[in-house]
Length: 314
Image 1 (cartoon, rainbow, N blue to C red):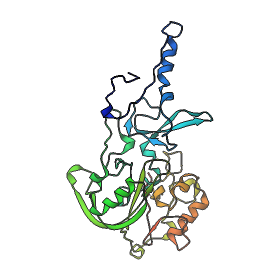
Image 2: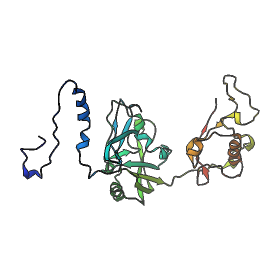
Image 3: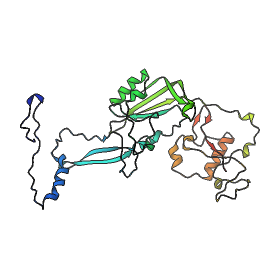
Image 4: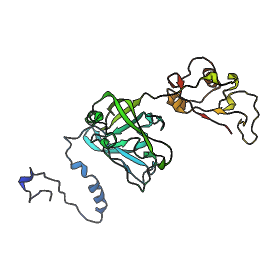
């Protein structure tokens, strides 16, 4: 078989394989698995690339990172003598787009990622990769199924070839009308700004779709409110107030006033918000900005209105 003695020349040149006699003596049988496992030593190395290779997304129930949708990142290992082996590591698909996961469901802006063949790895219309069960098959579709706008074809072809660029065109966005299936959906035609480019040392490409969102600002003059007491931070250990504490909590909680808690998406730099503990000075800056005209301490601003989220304390 290795010499291909029955080779048919009409199918192309002969590819000589590797043949090796193996002594099946009992003392050497344990070496058989080593011989079989090192087959790659006989593979040609002239055409090998130093570029990392990502496998197709799959669910591995035996992976230590959990039964989630993952991809394996593999690349060759070379030493002074040349090719030495292959090294791989498993990566959660959900972690590949952690930097743009702060787009909320209410926003029209989103991001997606494909490989060189156009296969979708991440897209908001696909099931969340963090919740794919080990008993489920991953949903692998071509990007043209999800991005059907004629203007997007040139963007997709550029991404598949490793190109980069930007483009602006009107795009239809489909959003659910509610949380239930029977609530239906709605489509909105908005101007979309697409920015795409390759991910270094991989065959992946990332595209960010940005939409100029519409926000409404409530006129504060319509509220008869004392601004000095309107703001209460959720962590009352960092502030002082005269409200009665709730006796059922070890921390300072109250039923007398609603409190404000900011999510990472409320800030221009969400990672900076997550990487440090808030201080009393930070809370003072938040309060002064919301209740007066002091400088912005880092909140994300849309049309002079903040993207803030509040929660009621109990």
